[in-house]
Amino acid sequence: MAGNLNRFSRQLTRSSENTDHHVQKMKLPDINKKRANLRVQYLTLIGYMARIDGKFDEKEKNLLKKMADRFQLSEKNKKLIFSQKEFDEKQINETFQELKKNRLHYSFILDLISMAMADGIILEPERMMLSQVARLIGLKHEEFHNLINFVQATSNLNDDNHNDPMFQYVIEMFFEWARQRDVTLYKQTTFAINDKVDWLLKKDL
Image 1 (cartoon, rainbow, N blue to C red):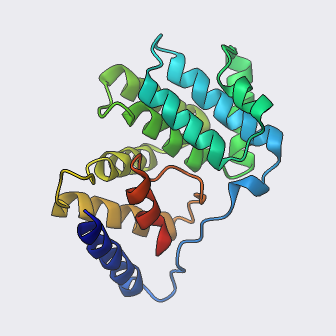
Image 2: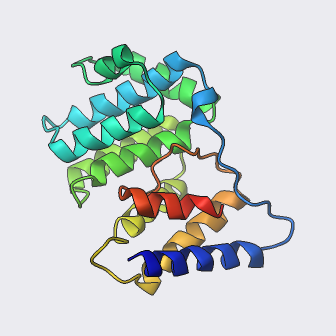
């Protein structure tokens, strides 16, 4: 696995070097420089949406715990994001606007898609919910599909698979699109549910 991923990482680097010289390498800012209450809002809403279908399985809980650690939340705030806090439509829309204002909306949707993918598949009701959230937060149809295709591709890079050229192509095209459109993602944004894949995808950006 390590050999396959390292080769893939080098391929991503070459792909980045071969893009137009006016295109900057993709920078990943530190989300923990955002104020604490905004990070709590972000993950509390992720948790709420993960539970909205009445299911919140162990894989989803573990991913949310991982996100909370990456976001450097206090123990008190970690408990808050796992609470049964409810959001009404007005609160959801206000939170979306705040996330967009702080350039967190792409990261939020990518993390939310990863949460839906935690059990290995995005079901149609989940896809419909994600599409609605993307629309409410102001993402275009093309942007939403670039994000969801990226998560599905990275989820197929695991210990049991060689890297399928199609998944590699989808990932390379995603990073090219993100650079060209000045999409802001963060060091703590979930690129892949597998920690090693996540690290390798980020390290050469």
